[in-house]
Image (cartoon, rainbow over all chains, first blue to last red; front, side):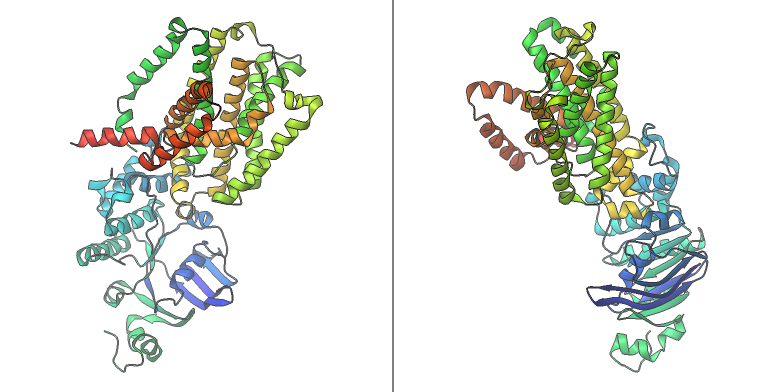
Length: 249
Length: 312
């Protein structure tokens, strides 16, 4: 479904992403792991059109989407959530998701119909699914960090994506929130059939939900394979564990 | 956004409109004139707030559209033999087109840079109007614009202003509450995220700038009706600053905030400037107090106050 080949991006001579490759098949959950500063978020920004790559190719559903602006990427069925909470702070939880649904329905040029009556059931269904229905009238700036991270995902779901990118979905969450979030991600895969690409520092989560893993170090892909391949790969251990002999568990 | 201040708002709106309609019965000419000026200045500030408070676009020189609306109307009435009513359409349309053109040039920049470029382009328009004696009358402006009989009397002008302002405010309100308005507020809060949910941010803002220019122009053409004159100062940048102050003072996250701000500023300008020529000094002090104590403006404060009462 997604095919990334030798993507490149440098900032002022610093090669943030250098020869990153990745492929995701329909229905898979793929994790990108790597130490801090490996270029994971930059890679996601390049795929989703937030940044323009210096070189390389991104194919999505067989079509070239390299360097397309994000709104066009999104209209092709790809949504993402952000690592740093990136919601609409002055809008309520409901409005946050609703605006995303409205954008998906291409209604943002409608000047006269009242928003309050549009896309209500779709929005409520999403809020129900992610467990934010009880606080839908709260202003999103008033939410806890964990709730905002969930809202993050809910906004991405507003675009009813086929392909979802989650940038550290559980970062900063409490243990219970993390458990709930993992259940949510599993549900998205199983019930809605969404293909998911995510990055995460918590290895337990990575190994428990992903079908395949891509490891990135200093901007480059060093291995792409199943959990077992990655667990025992020497290079990964060098990068992550400073050269210990034990397999990652 | 659920707004307790506006809950069950319809009776209040109707009551306010009735009071405004009866105003000329109770008040003498000068106050009716003042009320008309407040209404049209408020409309101008509200149209600015459409892009400033709801769109997050730093339109620093909005008075240009107000002025161009006024000049468009006045010149159309004076220079052409067509129906004078046509002037009231031409003025706002020209202002809307100018809003689009300046928007196209400035939109590639964001935030303050947008504002700086917009001030310079607006000042350019002002300079042209100021210097082009043969067409615009230069710094003398145009006086004694002939109007259709029905709106040439003070009361006629007032009612025309009231009706047009009410209709324009209603349209702007509907737009803010429409999907377009939702997307616009989304962009204000977070442009990157808006783009990521499939909104074409620049195009959306461009349409908003065009609409704001149009309604700024409507306010300008109403000034021609009320005052019978146009002059280049109507589009000088200091007036734009006043419009921004009105939005901040009244509350730029409430729909009626700019209207309230316009009321406060126009009254201050009228009464305090009678006492001292340094009325801007008083304005400056009030502005500082507002920033310290009412950072969300007068209506923003009342809104919070009402919410607190409702909770306890």
